Length: 253
Ligand code: BTN
Image 1 (tube, rainbow, N blue to C red):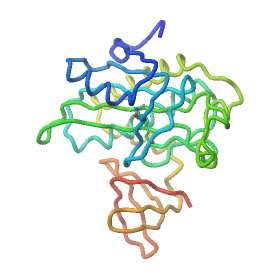
Image 2 (cartoon, rainbow, N blue to C red):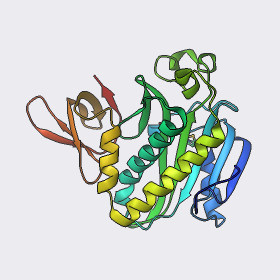
Image 3 (cartoon, rainbow, N blue to C red):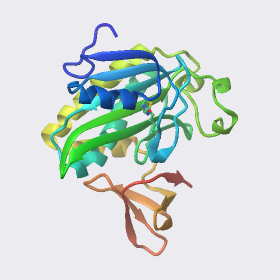
């Protein structure tokens, strides 16, 4: 990565050919004293992790499989805000580099034409209420072609190359992301979640739409109304009840 314009993020970069998961490597690096801003990149992951115990398809040389080490001085319950912040930074970076129409499905899936192109997984470690560190795992399907996806993913997943019709420079995209993230992160630490929330809302493809979500207590169907201060999604049920969703997946209807 030449000519990085960030001050802290990506000042230390670890690049691997093949790993099980860049998340695992990042956790080990923290234990060995790695500092905030350190990033781990791999050409290929053999056991890429997704949200909610799912796996993440990470074939060789075609994507950005990256973990970013952060040590924000915020309480554990602010983590969802950091998740939304990551999605905003990633969305803006992709818009700048690829000029594609991209939006965020709550909480942090990036969609182009309704198909997922990128996902974010935040893993943290902390004691009591204090966060010790966060590993932000970023997966971007950059130059995958249709044949690089297993059959069952083709209807729901896409890549930047498929959608834009051109091969995208992974280096430019990593740099653009780190720059956007650094800017958003500084804004967040200084001014709190409010400005990030506005940016997230403007990029959302979830708000003001009918959605369905499965929670531990059952299926909720309703109208996605707004984001609250903590980053939770407020859904209005058909009977007019306001329900807050803190985690899980939403399906656009
Ligand atoms: C999701 O949408 O479910 C989140 C996917 C996150 C994938 C990235 S790829 C780099 C990092 N390492 C992993 O094992 N997972 C994340």
